[in-house]
Length: 328
Ligand code: NAX
Image 1: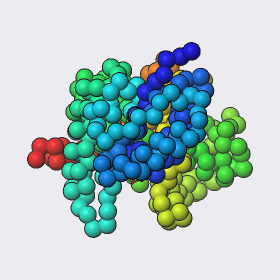
Image 2 (image 1 turned 90 degrees about the horizontal axis):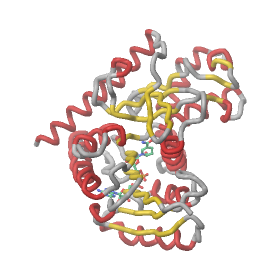
Image 3 (image 1 turned 135 degrees about the horizontal axis):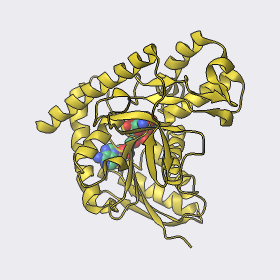
Image 4 (image 1 turned 120 degrees about the vertical axis):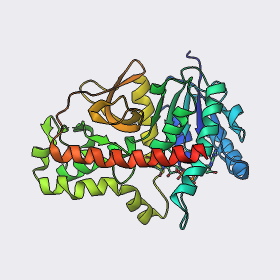
């Protein structure tokens, strides 16, 4: 029998936590043969909700779940964790300045970086979900120098899956045969969902869809604005699809991307595709042996290049604001 792996979920008492914890417990993240110990962290005021989640997980009688531990202390929560899903953060509320929100997240991610560095397993894999996800991941990387850069990522898989879903609906195909879309850049409305290298049942997406006006227009804005559309419809932001995407992200990272296909992940840029080194930027990646690799050499046309730059510029701006907060 395999040794249990410890999975930390921060912000576990929130919506995504409620959808994610059971998915991890059934094996969607690390496989149907991998025992799990869940570390659930939230802030003190959420203590009762966290205890409620723990009780429900016990009541789930999940065969893979060897333990459910709850924490309000971040250092204790990080002890020996193998995977860290960072869902907790400070959301922007109406009327708040961007800089004030950034300052709060910088301070949270600075503290959590130190806690992970000091307590987590040496090869912990980190995925940041909380917004601004790319920049929170960058702050985490900056403040946890002993965690390898390549182990710190942010979630853009939800955007990637949204793009797959849109193409599947439009072409009346099952989503399983849509492959190799790309989310470039920031997990925000400047992201670039790129179909130029994707296929539907082996056929280029552009010819399968046969409507460039839609692909260059409404398709892009629908993916970029999908989060807002879900909030409008549900009165709450995406949770089950976000949780599903977290499981997909970690599963592909740990167990590998299927042959002939890639996924999208926010990773610390090595300068690929002319993006500034050090930014956390979403790229097409393949994974094998627990490591991701940026897909190299894809031809990027003029309009796409411009979109890559726009989302990069936003990330530079976020990084500069975050570094300014860090210095103050
Ligand atoms: P909720 O507000 O339901 O839950 C967040 C939880 O985090 C709360 O329980 C809160 O108490 C906790 N928290 C706050 N500060 C904390 C800290 N310092 N340590 C530990 N816990 C802390 O939000 P939810 O809907 O679950 O969304 C969580 C985050 O995911 C948000 O930042 C949201 O913007 C972001 N999202 C990111 C997505 C992505 O694709 N990257 C998509 C979904 C989601 O919108």
